[in-house]
Length: 592
Image (tube, rainbow, N blue to C red; front, top):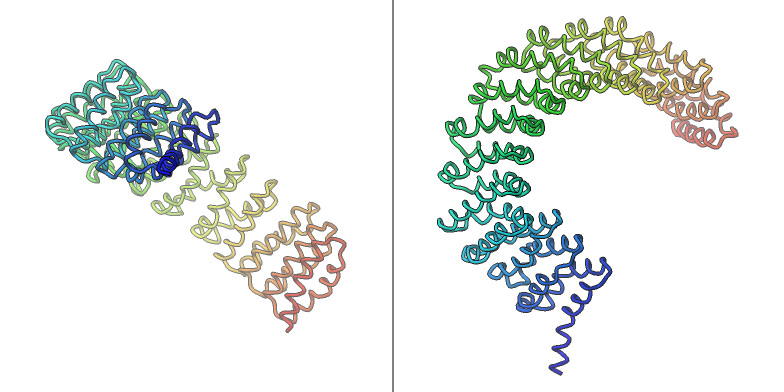
């Protein structure tokens, strides 16, 4: 009986072994995902003595299975199955093996799991087991193990003795000067993380030297990752140390011979700016940023343009205007006419945001001409980005200056070939109308609003009807009766059924903001006429519209609709009959 029980206790590990050796990848995956169940069945001791050694010695060659194994072993709850934190070091051998495989995603997952396990390892075991593992990985024959080692120093360092800390720093220094670029790249990528773990004296004495070596590496892929470490290191140093150790490297990177490094500097510039502070920005970084705005590579100019507003906002107030006008504005003027449309588009997305920073006079003198240039740009995305940000300029210079300078260009864009540009103009129209006032609006823009109702693109016609409703909300029902309705209702006579449909769509929206008198006198006769249209789509939309009108009118007038509805209820088209019945129910409900 005892033997039988022993045999039964071996069953889970036997199933695991069988499935791990199965040709079917899915079976092997299922087995790995059941590790916690199998470990629970085996018990803590057998998991440590049998399961983990088995996993270490019989690693599968399929990347998906290896990744799943790394994930399972790093799960915070799996430590319980090996006996808790006191035995968490037993998880290191299989993860160490996974950290040396060829596939990058598996190695990254193994390192992630090792970092998770390190949080539960005791200080004694950290030096006894974790640090020796780092040593083995860092001295491995293949570059794969050495790249994995770079991600483990920051979690091991705080728990070590002073002597071990010095050893870890030396090992990391060796990795930063490794013969293989991939290892140096990994060391550069984790440098900022490691810097956070170091004491100030070790940071200045050891890590700064590594940083400089990586920042001057012959491989641009290493140098650009060193740029990322700049902001981490700058945040950890005193101001005078930043000026001495970080600024020279940063300004040098902004002029690097590789555009990828310069791109990284441009992309991270505002992070670096915040890290070094406003005073060092004034003396060192404004000029560097200006050089990036003038960079020969379009990708670098676009990246720095995207950071322009944020960079200017973070400048010290006492020198902000002067720095923008003297050092950055000449570059901005060049970018507005750049040969590359992505650069112009990036600038257009942020340039309007400079208005609140520069104030009214400087906006009118320096920025308005650039807005005008970009509003007339041949690239639709550039025009769209400018139009979408007009409100921020309006708050600074006022509508009168805006309409005088930009309105002609806006009118031109309202007839643009690209429908998305026309749509952006429509969406901005209610704000323009409110600020221009009735007189100026009718003189300059009212005709445009009518033209959009007969546009060839449905999205434009739909937006135009919504726009009319917003205009009536601002200018009132009496204005609508004189300025809008004659033209809208006149479209009911158009030979194109699409235009007749637009009349109904407009009435549907306008009924909510017009008085009951306007609804009864102006709208109702037109809708009743359209209810007899030869096109079924027009008839059922007329039936739907009558429903809306009836809710707005008094009972005596509603009775006039009943004969029309009786006719529609006998219509050949099922949709017409359905909506006519809905409207009739509304009428009956009002009568009762």
